Length: 243
Ligand SMILES: C[S@@+](CC[C@H](N)C(=O)[O-])C[C@H]1O[C@@H](n2cnc3c(N)ncnc32)[C@H](O)[C@@H]1O
Image (cartoon, rainbow, N blue to C red; front, side, top):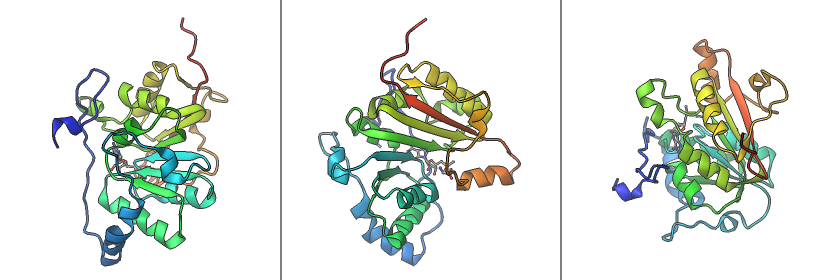
């Protein structure tokens, strides 16, 4: 990928992208949907790099983005349960994209659109306050210290989330990796447009309302990681007072 295709970090350096794009071969039914339906669901970035969100969903209802939806089970369920809300899913893994395209076809979901590249590129193309919520559920943990800079949560991505989520909206984050939970809280504290106000200490271990474990949460439980962190960060009306 040419350097200029990479969004820049806050320090002006191109941000590297480490998502795995392909896995097992798609079966023939998935291949057909991939070729036929996926292009109709896919959001392409315009030449000028500015996306009109009203053109995606016709300007009606709320707009919610899920980043790294994996097999898309959570996103498809949300879309079924909230037919008036427009959902955009970002995923780069071919097998996961194919699964969600299949769910969209089987359930006749007309409120789902997909972006098949780095979610940061989509965020950077969206106007201010154009989203009501963003979900980042079990992002790749990159446990080794030297790989932490690959984590999706960074000053650059949080600044873009704060810009694109409208005041009163929220950013939901879930992980089973305590170090990533701490990493995210440390970064959120430095982003004054987000507020973390849990009901009580430890309430962040309670899943979000209506939660059904995602594929990665199920994997974590099978592997003996029994605790998860469910953070909901509110996009504040005004920056927090300093000091
Ligand atoms: C650990 S999996 C979790 C999948 C799902 N959310 C779940 O809980 O089962 C993380 C997913 O994020 C995707 N991903 C990683 N970085 C991404 C990015 N910058 N933009 C879009 N998707 C990304 C990966 O391809 C992977 O499928």
